[in-house]
Length: 253
Image (cartoon, rainbow, N blue to C red; front, side):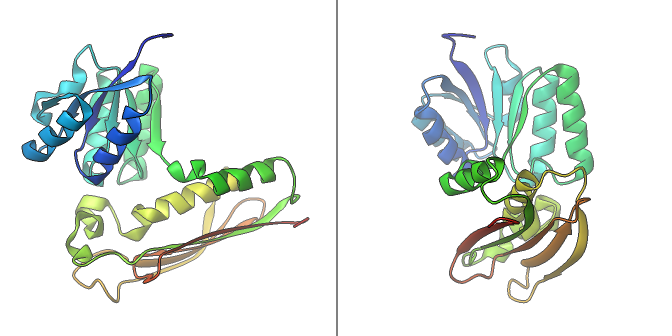
């Protein structure tokens, strides 16, 4: 409503939660009303920074009438249950990528959001990076003609002990690098090459360095849509010098 601030409950007081608090503090139409986390100490610190109250998740603070929207920035295994609870409570929901650990879970959330007539958004922020957004607009404007293929490389080096973090545990993350930064890459492929259905023409993965993990650390994919447009994707966490490249080729350039 015009003139009304959107009151937000932030679920997750980790690194991403802190980033979201800083971002929302700069947005005049949003106020963080509640911060919730199972880690009471970290949750209270972030709540103080946000000028919000703290509540433990078991109290379901996002279901109260003073909350308009819920931001869920937790490890992947918690995204679906929290998003489901928030939608059932009639709240708009922003959930960090990948949104859930399985396609079946995401279909449930989409169906529930439609029934409840609520917004459900997934955090694919790469679309808003200046150069990527500019490239996409050039495609829409026909600057390089009809698209032929994309080539995307996205890698970073991890950090000491990375294979013991939740991101590298299948039960907690749902997969390895493809469920993490790989989701950003796949989203960009779908954004630049809208398709009813991509098929995996070829794919392979490896785990040679982070050996205590039970998921992939490198993945290579060739995706192809019904128009025979292709995307080459490489993503991994053994890229010792971080890299991100997005190459877009059309029949005119």
